[in-house]
Picture 1 (cartoon, helix red, strand yellow):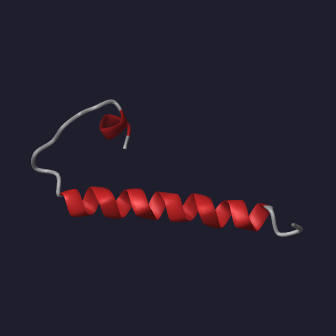
Picture 2 (picture 1 turned 120 degrees about the vertical axis):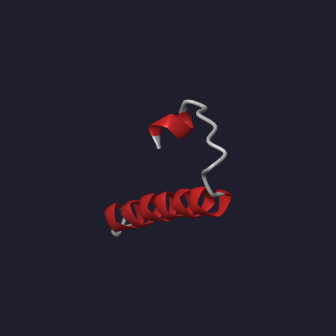
Length: 40
C-alpha cells in the first residue's frame, strides 16, 4: 500500500485487485467510524 501511495506503478498488479483492496479499506474505515459514532 505504501508503494502504491508513493506512485510505484507495477504493471503486473491487477487493477481489479487494487480497486478491490482500496474499496475494502474504505469500507473498513466507514465501519470503524460508525462503531465510534454509535451514540449519534
